[in-house]
Image 1 (cartoon, rainbow, N blue to C red):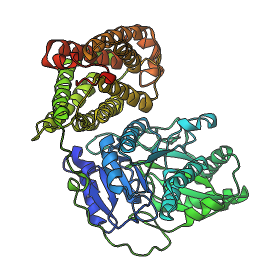
Image 2: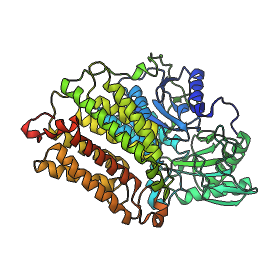
Image 3: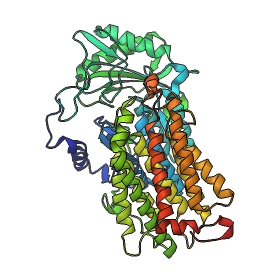
Image 4: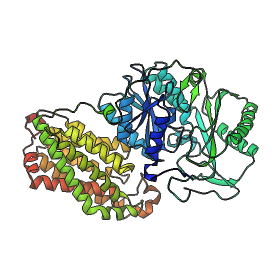
Length: 590
């Protein structure tokens, strides 16, 4: 159990501050995580990794020459928010593009994905390679659904070495994908881990038993079996991984025995010796192995075995030098320190000066977010009850947290001298929504709000066509990031009909106000229609039968918001402005 802390809620941030203080020669603190404190050659690809805290040496401990350029650090076992990933990537970017790499977990996929969309929209070419090495989490034919565990290290190391060698983004991405394809891991646990301030572990293992196939976020294994001897455990791990080896695997492998928190090094070494003999008997040559704590899970009693099947190309980059706080290999020439202005100033871009039209539209955007906040406050409990039928009941609470933060950020931006463009107002709002709400809806709403803002930009004039572009960008951000489709029983089932009805009405010559009214009506009808659907995505999927007869809470909350915004535009000065909007080709101002 974790004993040393003041306020458990501050544990992750305070631990990261202390880590930076102890490793200033390697890392510097930025808002959202850490980046290298040493100079990075201009044009070098920036490998940005990350995930929840509690896994040291992953992820911040792997930042340094030859490995990662930065790490986004979330709360304990929680994905970093999209804004954190974005800010770390901006600070790490050296002109050669960004490769994001992290374990395949839903929250990380959403928040890193949102950051990637934003970075690409700003002209910073950004790619993603997910780590999917855990053979216990999905069968071989569904390898894309597997989790990332200690195989993070092999992917990060080879991608980082490729970037250090000066390869371009295409090649760094290719090598990372290839490494992930050739990496397999399997973990076991003898006891669960305990979060700071908690009085019990996240799971327990019965006495005399071992849990097989655990994750690194305190998830229990997929099965339990009697506690084996060391030789039996080595045989189990090796046989399972060899049975799952990738196509085209050779005979040279990297073997990594990884301790998850409390298994002593002597035990890990003992096990590694037995594993090495089994690999040798299978005709494999072990190349530059690792044995120790590399990707942990707080104080979990457990370990994992990772195998990476090498070829000549991968072996060269695995053997290349690296110098980070927690992982060192070979020798690198000393690097000069670079000056970073600190967590706030280092990422503060020059604030744009909005045009008069953009400032007015920025205030309008803040006003509409205020209406969104009002409708969520009114329906918070109702949305929670609806979500509790087949989910965890937090949809109302999450939406409230997100919209409250978004409104505060939007109002602050719009209140600046000279105002702010809709791009700046909605980017601030979307980032705040994502960071405060967390979870799936936080990432999706944050991404969509930012996308709408970027579509509106900072222009001398606006037409109704810009409103249509913002609606399209809002929907595209959610569908691209969440990967849900019509019929999956998600917010998308109300969102797509909203967009289609808006564009149909607008293209037929209706004003923006009238198009919004038609769209809100379509969204409401579609949200009601989700009652007859079985959920194919999200947390409600395992309880599909329970969900039948009840509408999807995400679709309902979107329809409520669309209806409120439509009604507000019809009865306010906002509506007066929007009603005069004409199709873009007529050039009328919104």
